[in-house]
Length: 94
Image (cartoon, rainbow, N blue to C red):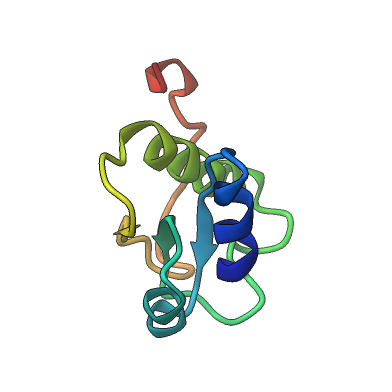
């Protein structure tokens, strides 16, 4: 995903990658990334866990708004199957 993100960024479109492999994310040099220590294949969370998945999308959008330099890797600290998720405050993405 990192190489694709860099190509899209080169066309002037900002991107955020949601990553579960920090070492690869750092090596590829993505423009912006949200990193979570979750199992492979689950970057947005568990199946049928809509609030968890929306929270991950929210984290990506928030990083898109707040990142002030390239190469930022944000780690929100969510723990796999040990969190209770609620609907994000979408209005705070100003």
